[in-house]
Each structure stands twice: as C-alpha cells, then as structure tokens.
Length: 227
Figure (cartoon, rainbow, N blue to C red):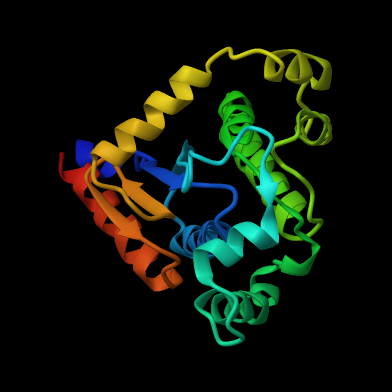
C-alpha cells in the first residue's frame, strides 16, 4: 500500500526566533534550557537570534556597572538583584554556565554586539556560537562587549573575518536596520526577554523549563503538518 503524501513528507523545521539582549543573564540561561528541549524533542528547529535592548539609553561607551545596577536595584543587602544573581550562580553550572558577576565592570551599550550576531547568522550555528561567545565574554570573563576590539576578537574566534568585522563596526552600517528590528519587537508588545516566538504564531516568555519548550515545539510542528 502506498504511503500517503502527508506521511511521506519530511517534517518541516520549526522556526524559532529568540528575542534577547546580551546583557540579560536570563537570556543565556533561557537559551540553554531551550537547547535542552530542542535536543530532547528530536524535532528539527531553525533558530534565529533577534535583537532587543533592555536599555537603549546607555551611551555607546557604556557606563560603570556597579553604579548602573545600584541605580536600578538599590544597594540593600537583600535587594532584588542580589537574589537574582545568587539564583543564576547556583543554577548556571547545571547548564554549563559560569556566571561571574563580580568580574563585570562596565554596563555596555549592546547595539554593536547585536550587529555582530546579525552578520554571523548566515547560518544558524554561527549565529548561536557568536551569541554564546558574547554572553561568556560578558558574564564569565567580565569583558566590555560594547568595545569594538573585544567584538572583533570574538568574531575571529568563531571563524568570522575579524578585519572586516572591525571595519564594519567602525561604521554605522546596518545600525538603523538593527534599531528598526528592535522597534518591531517592541511594537509586538515584547517588554521582557528572552521571548521565544514559534513559527511566528505564539511565544514562550522567560527562562522556562525544557518541558514548556518541548510542548511548544510539538505544538508548532503539529500546526505546520496540518497547514
């Protein structure tokens, strides 16, 4: 008996857009939880990193990190940031993340970092590798990821053209395109990151457990099969 056309088709990859900012620790944490779900689900997924700036008012040269966080969260020993940091530091190792908040000295403007990730996404692996390298540079090594030299070095380490990256980052090329993309997602109502958008239809917000993503992947795959 011949197999039906529906049965013979290979499953189409689920399209996932992760809206994130590289100074958001929950975005790194949340991506790793998503990645666990992706591997467990066995369903093909195409991931695209989308830019978001939690604070676009940070100047291009960045600001002192401790002063910035104090202005946001206060300096009480039991403040919200301290509790968040401890939760991330405790949970990070299980996901292969070594948060070292004490190493951070600058709160950068993240526009250049988003531009680099944009260029890297000629293929998914390069985009993800670049995003993770930037997260690690900031949250583990305490590097200024708003600095052209740091981003140029990262570009070379992930196999991109470092010289070309330096040249492009010294211009405003595609900066407006990134800003427009950020504005687009703000207009969709996204006010917190990470936000994972499945097939452009529904979203999983925050650093959710893998089970939430597995359910979303399966839902998106089923909808795609029925379309």
